[in-house]
Every structure is written in C-alpha cells, then in structure tokens.
Image 1 (tube, rainbow, N blue to C red):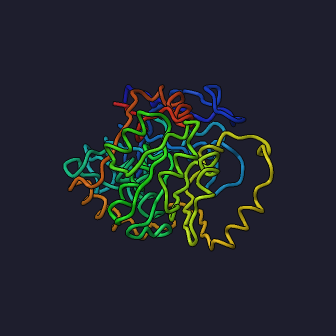
Image 2 (cartoon, rainbow, N blue to C red; image 1 turned 180 degrees about the vertical axis):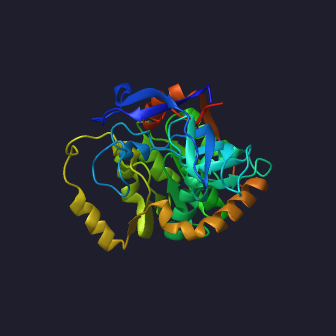
Image 3 (tube, rainbow, N blue to C red; image 1 turned 45 degrees about the vertical axis):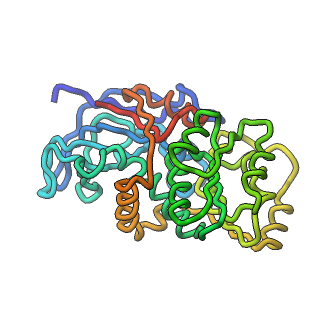
Length: 338
C-alpha cells in the first residue's frame, strides 16, 4: 500500500497530569496479515480514563504500556484484507488495536459488528466496555431495589449515564453528579435522572443531602475525591459501593493531603455493614451476552439513551485524552479517523 500507518506511541511516563511530551507520533509501513489474521483500517478509536493507568509503571490489574509502544485502546475497524474464512473485506469489527490508523489482528480476537443493528460507534460506548461496566457493576454488586436511592458521579459520561438509567429501569431513584450546569441538564432531562447535582457548586454537599432525604443505598464510585467526601456521610446501613474508577486521583503524585480518614471509613464499614467492592468489568465476562441482549433492547425501546463526543483525527488524541482527565468531554469520547 502507498499509505503509511500513523501511530501514537508512549514517549515517556507522566508525572501527574499527562502532557503532549508523553506522546510521540510516528509513521510506519502498513503491516501485512499472516494466516488467520486480518488487516484493519481503524475508523474509530475509544478514549477512556483507564488509559492513564496504562501510562504508569505502577503495579495494577493490567500490564503497563511500555515506552515506545502504541497506546492501548479499543477500536472499531474495517477489514481491508482477510486471511481467515470468517471475515471478508468491508466487514466492521470491534478490535483492540490502539492509537494507530492500521493494524493486523488475529481473527479470533475480533467481534463482528452489524451497522444495521446499531451505529458501530456504540461498540465503544453504551454497547461496549463502558456500558458493560455499568451493567455488570450495578446489577451484580450494587443490586438496586425498587425505591432505593442510587447515586453515581461522572453521570454525563458513558458509564455513569448508563448506571443511572439502569437504576431507573430497576425501579430505584437515580441521583447523578456531574461538572457544570450543561452536563447536569443533560443528566436530568436527556438521561432522565431524578436529580442532577453540580460537584463544582459551593453548596454541593448540602445539595446532595437535600436530594437524598432517605440516605444513599448504592453509590457507584468512579471519581473519588471530594465527591466521595460528600457521599460518605449519607450512606445507609447495608449500602453497596461498587468501585470501578477513581478519576479524581489518577494524576495525583506523592501522599494524599489531609488527615488519615481510614479509621473513620473502617468504623462505618463495620457499624453500617457497608459493602465496598472494587471490580474490573472483565471479571463478569460471562454476563456479556445478557448485557448485549438487555442493553440492546433498552436502547431500542428508548429506556436507555447515550451521547457521543466525537473528535476528528488521530493527531487530536493526546489533547482529547488530556481533556478527558479534566472532564472536558461531553459524553463518550471517540476519535474518528475516517
């Protein structure tokens, strides 16, 4: 092929907030597939908060991206050349090809997408990893019951918005927390939460207390920081706290400021019989077929809605990712490569 493969590599590990210096753009030859593989043209690239952890060498649940490697990401791609009987040129697939414009992938690692069933971008959001994180984490660990109060932060994002809408389907009250009036309006009026609170408001803690007069039964944690500080005193006896992320802390360096509050937390874990459970969505992979069935049905009948924030061009990925960690995105953040 006359075209080259545009790639964005991890150039260095960030200290605190990532910068453009942590990324390097290179051009390499377009790869050639072997038997059992396909050549992919990446059309859409997902940007997600977990990628900040992959940039760090600290011990985690998944291996770090090595210096000089392509940044990791889920992608929607078009098959250009196939050396596997199950795929043909033109097929659209979900792959994990990273921040690049072309990739070779083993056919067994792909999932074929049907553009007539749902927009292919949803495989990166509401019908993909973020949506499944919400589905499995809330239903398996949060277990919301009719009449209970479910609170979720980052409620305008792909995970949080799905959590609140699923909670409503289960008969619970959904209270969303987001950053700024525009995001709160989306949460309340588009996603149908019972209330939406701005964590930037100076009266945020008081507003949350007023919105949860009967306390909080389920808190879906994906932010941490001052949002957790406001939620913690309102947790009811037997409250469940699925923990899927701590985006407020991802850029932190060194010890955290303030007093040691672990003794207070552990006291309430005991006296209120709290359940706090961290999870990675792949732990519940056996539920994926049920998720696709249920979420697909909820989208089709209008009970679950979603919003995508699509940015043009692979070269835009570093700046868009930095903005994601600062809450600048408005919905599921996706890079369109064309």
